[in-house]
Image (cartoon, rainbow, N blue to C red):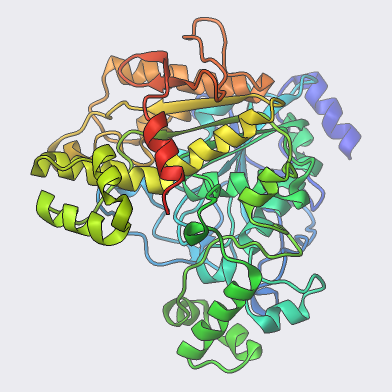
Length: 505
């Protein structure tokens, strides 16, 4: 059958009615222009429900006939999506379906020929507790039109993706638990390795990319020995797990298991059997905790990400990373006096230096400093640390961006400026999915950013004809590209402040 499919490709230079994957045949739907075909809701693993809750993803069952893949699979189990702050419905998963049965991926591709295309695998954000591949601004059609194969994947989040417990570790062959989210992502990448050629993709030219928690996931995958050979490049937008500060480092297995015991006790559940018997809705409501990737010691991350990098054990791939100017949204902005008191209470002897870099001469200045401080602590410091450490290896190149463009806004949205996630619609050339009064400068920036991203996917270098030069980042020149009203290279202006914050407890 595979030979017949390949023959159809060669004769028609087009997608056949069905594409053969390891588990069975799938059919997709063509775009309105007829030049891109999408395959939505392809299972890459068995549903992680019942006895498979909190287990490594298992192979998807084979099927007969042709599976019609014309709609996204369910988003992972999470709270009901509701707009908040600047994140309108275009940034959120569909209201339904939401289910524990969520391990599906989506593929967008143009006509298939013998020239295999670069593959782009998108990993969504959501604080490790929410999100899904069905978010409107993650649509892959525009990028596929630029002659790549675009893949978006689902993974388990929250308690379903990260719950660790001694009983779970005991039943595991690797004596570990947690990190099911990362295992799901690795399973999806293995699916890509085995199947993407049938969709016109090159399994030896895969770029993993993500934003926020998706970027942190990318950081973990680059560090993980389990992901070795599954991708050749990495893009991380606003996030990494590269924090050396002990107070902010990722949990180890023992700490995560202890948290799991407390969470189960608080939910008044006495056994693993009872935990697996709970409905997904009940589990979501009753079992609380801080759920994120851990240093599991045995499986996905044998050591903290930062330690794996300092020991030069990471997967050696080119990196494109950066952060946004105003992504440190603070729900409760304080006046200057209250802000100064808080800084003194939190930072003690370091408070004077903190206030030098994040000043509070006026209430307005204090408000901006709170946003900047939150941005740096949450996103910029860890991204900068990653870029510094990788570039110091002098092996694979590193490219760093600062996104400063303020998407056109009206009313209450004006104050959010270059907010967290603002760059995604530009990078994926998906402005049409956001209801904003877009200007020619926005369309030009989306054209430039998507071209940089595409070039990086192809060669590991974002530069190309007609684009402003983007220099490599290193600790000597500290050159970054500023993606704003104009696109140009600059020395990283925040270097002194970020270096200081890296050393601050």
